[in-house]
Image (cartoon, rainbow, N blue to C red; front, top):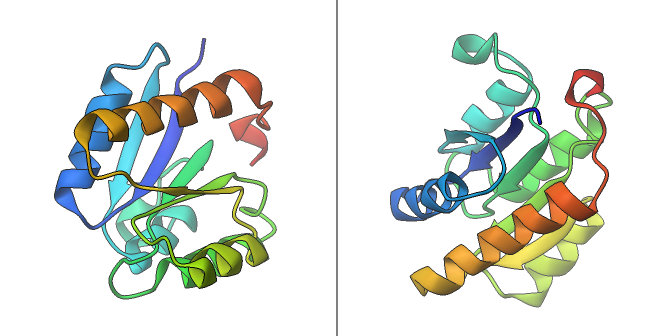
Length: 145
């Protein structure tokens, strides 16, 4: 089984570490890269600056409330880019506002998941995401993304 490449766009260090810990306990081989703001996310995805050799991820976990470029603007740019738009984007945010949820789906989010505050619940959500996206869903081969 090949490694699954996941890009996490998250500025909260604690949430990033919880996600990393959850993926480290996975039955899947997951390579997790983390960027901390919208500019880094777009540079990574477009292979610019220090991310020139970054591979396209199989999935993106995107927080909305990130610095420099808001997560919804990052999502909009991803879904307008022919080279990136087929990558599943899971909005993984603490926001539960109806406007954020609706706008994210209108911009092309594959799904919207609210981050729990409890560690066990956080782990459960990450494990559920990985089981769904990497077992049930058929993803395009990353070399074609």
